[in-house]
Length: 144
Image (cartoon, rainbow, N blue to C red; front, top):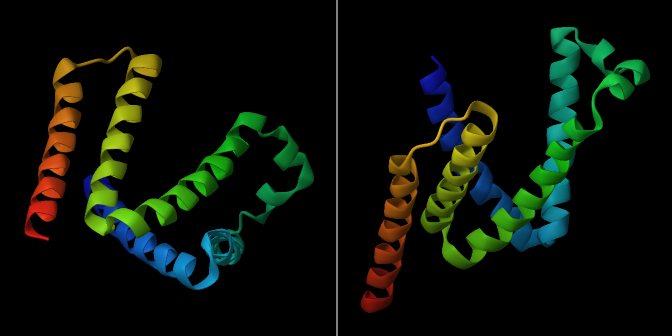
């Protein structure tokens, strides 16, 4: 089930990327990101109230959460702006591949920092993905 959820996440991230790019084209990058976050906030509030977990929005609970947890929203906003900007210039496929390489790279670092897990094979795999991306880009330039 977790593998299916991860696969669906990748599928939905690509749809999200393309709709964010279109919002960025039509409204500007900052406004497109804002529209996405407003929609996500409304949907999140709806989900909170449906699940009956609205107590998690109490000021006491919000203050009890470690401050670093809130950096996720900052990282998400920066990632979304970079996603809109990058996909406009590279297209969905290359942007998705480079995002995957970035995801894999930080995952390797975090696995090492938090769990002491490291593997040269994983690092080599990322370089193979990047090499494949470069080959696709070179091929595109030759045929254009």
